[in-house]
Image (cartoon, rainbow, N blue to C red; front, side, top):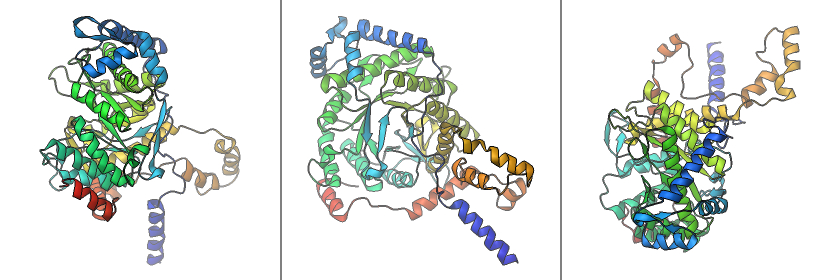
Length: 503
């Protein structure tokens, strides 16, 4: 009898652990229900942004870009600035790519950006990693980047992977860019993203991507890596090195995320409305730049409002202000019809604790409910973006499932209303346990977490009283011990190593 009970319990546990036949909360759910701004608010912010571009314009414009902007319809302003008539901004918006595909090397992992679909992914440039063994921070290494890449490869809710940490043990900028790109293509076939320190690094790295793609020119035909670039430096000026990278990426058909990352009270107004107006103007300046170089080139409109604690100047990634600002940014981008990129889940917590969960939960849910197409920084980041954590990756992946479930909402149908099921329960057993209607709902309506603990206190204590941090550490260690993909063939890897200094 004891063996029978145990075997039945084992079977139930195995069934719970198995992948459900129906995923109740897949990536790509529809957002947009949360609207922190009224349409009148958006119009006033947009009008102020247009006014800033028309009267103040952009400073420190590199000559090549200046020539292209003037040819597209911009005008010389005072003090060496270039101003953008509203008509030019309107043309850039009208001609912008409204949707486009972020390819994975595995086409089954590609995603379409734009519209009202929400996807969580990564970003960041953490210089410290929360060590799995010590539980303390240490400088991030190239090995960490490889480990993060293969860890997230097993996490379904990381829809694209941008390097989340900087390999501080690789001091040479070119070696850093090369080895970062190599880690991405070796460890995952999802869509990827990276940054290029200098424009002259782009072409050689494309050679490496061509090897992975199958031959010369193959990558540009179906690019599976996009570039993260910040061509605008707040307040209201261009950065020459980043602008040069934009030109090179467009030349090589690398989709780009043009990121505006102003800081409220420091490089943008402290008032939230004023901040949104300037930040929108700056991101529109990136769009006009792309329009002047190649109209319609795929660009994620990445308006990332960042907040600092005005008492201390410290970055505040987990605040309520961050939540509402990024939600408003997503709402405005959707209003313009542009593929939106926002940032969230940037907890200021150092440990995997209550602050961590609270800050990640409120910021990521707000951005998703507002309809951010690509939600960056949403997995693995800690310590106000200074840190990255393996445990955080697996915990955030489960959090995203709950968020997708919330976005999915409630489907009202004749079957779901359950009139017959209610009658059968009332006139029959007096409960709904074990009914076919309940079994069907279990599979289709509910998400069952594998990390969150739902045991009653005695069972939890008897099982070791594990907290979320320790459960997540065990899951991360298990993946890292068992998942070591090599998505490059021996021939491809040999060719890359013959051409580049792979560390």
